Image (tube, rainbow, N blue to C red; front, top):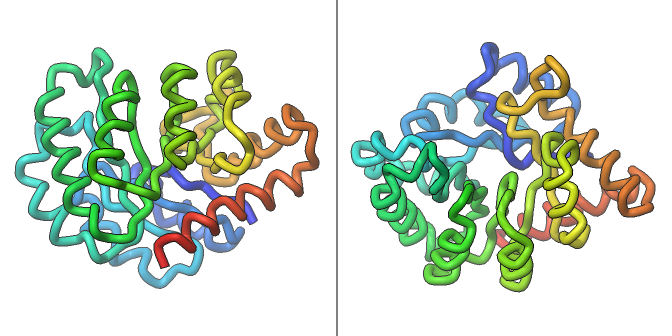
Length: 243
């Protein structure tokens, strides 16, 4: 069974088609949201599916909208076991809202601290700060989505028991390959971040996690079946922690 732990299916032109396709193919698909109001719009439509889940998000690059969304975040916290996309972005795109982001992210972590959740994290140019806040709020179940930081922080993340989700864009880049080589297979999960990644001129879909599985199979000298089963086992390990 394949798993897309970080997909924005609500951002496709036809989300219903994507969701139905994943359900039919039995692809476990965790849909990120960028704001709690987006979660509220989408959640009623996916409640009846077996393989589809929706995460409650507060994206750092939407920080200017956070103030009016915080109450909605808390209101919806018990409707899902998944939190995402949340985190910090101190790149050129996000640095101007750094203080708002930190305040919002701390609000999120304080809200979920006493609850059993799985968190999918955005950490671009803020990997150290995200890790420090996870430790401060004693968050146990976290996945660093599309990690692009340094190897030193990567190793600290591993030491703290967290996971990394790998997408097709990462396996196609030299920098991504270098980072992937540092991550043991038992800490890897698959994602696409679709529709924000592409394969050639085509937008990725959740089924494209197979590209990641194929790369890991080749780079780690294992069969694709073994890799697929191990990633599913990793996911089940996380799920069992929140039951």
